Amino acid sequence: MKQHTLAKSCHFDGVGLHTGKPVHIDVQPAPPDFGITFVRSDAGRRPVLVNFFNAVASSRCTLLRENDVEILTAEHLLSALFGLGIDNASIVIDSSELPILDGSALPYVEAFLAAGIKEQDAEREYLTIDEPFEYETESGSKYIFEPSDRFEAEVEVEYPSKVVGRQLATFREGDDYAAEIAPCHTFCFFDELLPLLEKGLIKGGALDNALVVVDEEPEEETLARLREAFSLPDLRRAPEGYLSNCPLSFENEVARHKLLDLLGDLTLAAMPLKMRVKAYKPGHASNAEAIGALVSNALTEFDDDEQ
Image (cartoon, rainbow, N blue to C red; front, side, top):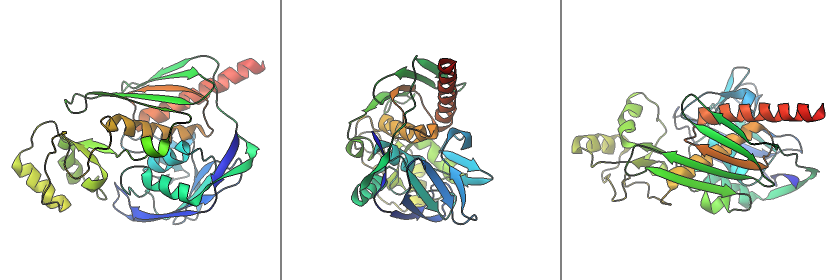
């Protein structure tokens, strides 16, 4: 398999979910073996490489930091690159946080497919393992990496919610990422909304770019506050158990979005994977921790083979 990049640059404008700041990004083609790198045009054009060394533990987004330069909420863009098999890209950004857009990876995917994906004159080098490797975090996330001749990923989530409960989602090399994974929206639970608003953590949020899980019919007073905060006079709980402004695309959309996030975080390995990945209750901080452990284990296996 050859390496790939974009045929031409793609441009995006929006606001950051957590900072609420306007942001413009250019996703540009890059030469073979370049990898994926962010360039902060508002911070002296200093680069931030996408790898697990630069990953900072964060529960609500993929956070990268290199030489005091930060990139927040990179997961949806990185997932689109991973899902479409794009190995090399330079991402020029004029703020610290990527735009939330519609809360999924679909806007990136549509733009990348329209621009075209270009095969390059260099072979892909894959991260592989010879033996199964398991990793469990203190937060209770569990990962199983198994040898395989192709990439496969499976995510299982389980929440104390009668609406979500236990869900599974899978993605295999050859599956249609654009149709099956990219459209899946980020999500939160109804009880989280007001505290997040009060803490100023969703300044760029809008309920048309996030699924909101609502287990019980909310009090009218609480709904009224949210209607006012988001300027949505008809906001209500839909029969499926979600707020009405973001219709459900898949019955297991919560698990599919967790899988979308995991695929984005797998770019922290800094090379494509050829293995089977199973993740139970994954999250951004746990993903980064597990991927760092995976790469370290794979390098140990390689050193042992060399000796």
